[in-house]
Length: 248
Image 1: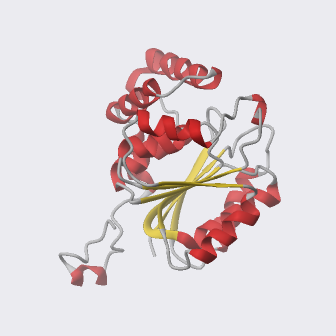
Image 2: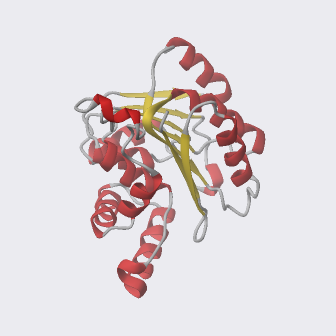
């Protein structure tokens, strides 16, 4: 993935062979092309109160500041990352209505999708309609790849899943589930070793006022890894998002 070795193996002597980095993701996320992609994807999905609010929020920012407006949330990062790296496998903890997953699916229609959720009713005060609804959303955006949902507490289901898929790595991993400090840290620790070289890990809500420690949880998890990784945080508007690219 994103490697020079396929054509110029000797170039690895100087540069890291992974060609994508957070700055590339950020730059693309702010382009008109990527913003149009997000708008188009949202328009194909069944709306709810939150998606309507975010759509209006984006519209107002772009109307007032045009191409100079700088805003990122989890969907922007998923959209930019999925379009650029074209993932073959996507794993998400905390699926809910499937907006992030559907965004990845719209960019990479054949990508294998794995979703982990407890499908709690009225989660965070919003409807949580379940996996059949998400499958319908994925069909709306033209997804044609395999889809697997795992129900239950990720701290139980994820280790079991990884034990059954001992050698599998993932192109994009999204962590947006348990927002307790301990639970979020455990999810990050569980998935980080399964991130493919050249792949992206995306972590939501680092600036959420109800979860003030998630930024530090993210930093702790990234600091613990024993491989090379490049990370970025955005927290200026909205609830914030962090992501990292594995480069070694």
